[in-house]
Image (cartoon, rainbow over the protein chains, first blue to last red):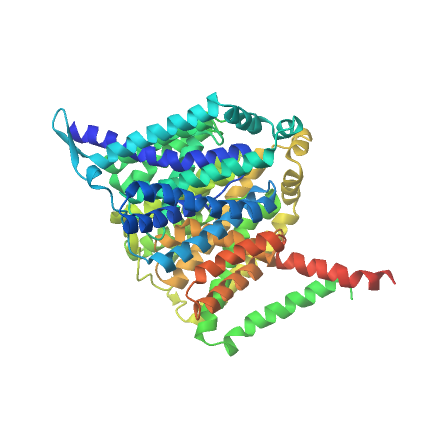
Length: 286
Length: 317
């Protein structure tokens, strides 16, 4: 019973991390029709930079912020000078961004080495919390859940309740009309892509504090993010939230109950869902 | 000289040099060339979908690895002879394609993402299901193939065997893509809605192409496991799937020689670069980027463009 609850918290906290990465991925697809497989590499780079900042300044918060901010110019350059040239050819985008991820991954290996590195967490988050019923759980994972909920709420408010969000939503529906009514769609693209990079970089620091950072981590986390958006539907923010929860919980319970088949537990339901709803839960036709 | 006889002469030269290769090349080159044939075959399986059906599958390594693992496990752990293990590998890989074929219900980017995720199931199974697959270490000590007491143990013998299989496959593939079936696949690639309105069951066509592609990939997997003598989860990795699709594109998508040329360029370049440059993965990544930006139709495409460019004024004289 206890471990069942523990796994639920594990799953939800992993979901919070996945949401950070998947929300950026799904929004950039929704608006720009870009499939960016380098998103995992942004995560890794953000994580490593945040790690370096945290080590030098001793501040975890600065590390999270710095890791996120540092990825923005990188993401902008890649977007502006490479991805933009592929137009809407998804095959070319996938190959191109996988190539970019290989380059970034190798550069990261050269700079930070091949060992698993853990982002140091602040003392306040290091201990464990005892819940009613005698369940002891690391404070950090609770903080992560709170952070995920905070980011999720902010994104949702931004997306649903502000002028910018309305324009982005309009852009997801029909880009030509949005630019025809005089909105600078290019500026919107830069904004959303910066937001996506920022979220991915931040996710790297936050995730690096409990999953550690190592060469190859970018692909592992990217696959989870892909499954999140496949579950939720490409281009849907709400879908990314629900998808992250589904994937986080399936993964936690799968690892606990069927350790050798945890990938089946995760991908099996996905395959079945796809048979009935090829575009995911919130995905729309078109 | 017309284009057709030109092609025949090129093919004969290629065949002659392939047959003569063991006479002049040392073990290092023989290993590399055998590897090129096998990966070329895998790239060809990618290209049946990519170049003819217009589907970009990123789970080809799964069929490759499932066939290889099945053969290896049957041979090593259960002691079955090659005559059982190799066909069983082919069947297992193809059955997986029958199952995964449901992905053709989707198109475009959804198809790409779904095949990536499906590919990871197999990788995960090989990696985590350690009690059966050997986990990280995989299956080692696969014996050389032997049929009816006749063993293909030497490197040269196996080289000729792989060459024969590849040539047979290339002929079969040529018949397939020139058949009405191949034609309708290219019709679907051009405009699926038009083919539908002409009465074709396009999804069934794509499904059949997916299964055939899985069969070719499985064949490459069986050839690979006897060549490599061991198999580990890397064979099922996403990286392999991406690399072979790059081979198909670098060489020239929609052709038969293209994937093999691509495999040669890719593997040759990687061997060469990794011998003196530490960041060789980054170099391969740069090759990906350069291909997409400057040579999307591959080497064969570049040659064609050059030939029409140079050849045209002459023909018109």
